[in-house]
Length: 210
Image (cartoon, rainbow, N blue to C red; front, side):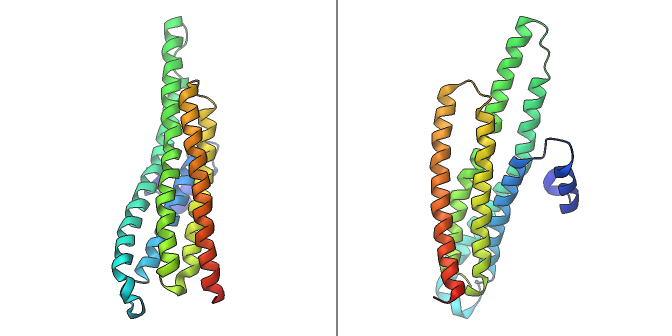
């Protein structure tokens, strides 16, 4: 599993001539990093007298951000696993008409599955950005920059995941599926941009003392 490797080993595999792991796994990793930063800000806020009034809320955010970090982490490997399934489908025999039909169906099925993984990353990003906004507004002011980096990592995860959704949609012949997913993708991108901008505005004000 990719998530059990050292950072150096992961980077070496990423930089190799193998197409997986690739951008999809990196998108999920970016989401995990963003969620982890939100968790850190919670931990740096909880237990501080200055933030006693928001301690209960911070504990709730902490639990949610930990769960999201775990979800993103699972998707790092899942993205590579689904990509490998697509490659396996393309490798199926195509000597007879029957084999060609089975191969084509397998390619379509596995490619749909591969498109859904980065879309799931995008959905988690929206939830994670909502938590980043809470810690930016109410968390330890000394960690305001970390809340900002969290938002940036999450927004980057969403944009990166969208590219991976779209490249898979290009290979899918089900126009209804493509239409639904493209509409969902656009909505998620719009929301992630708005949310990340809101968090960064809060962070900039906190850092400048406004």
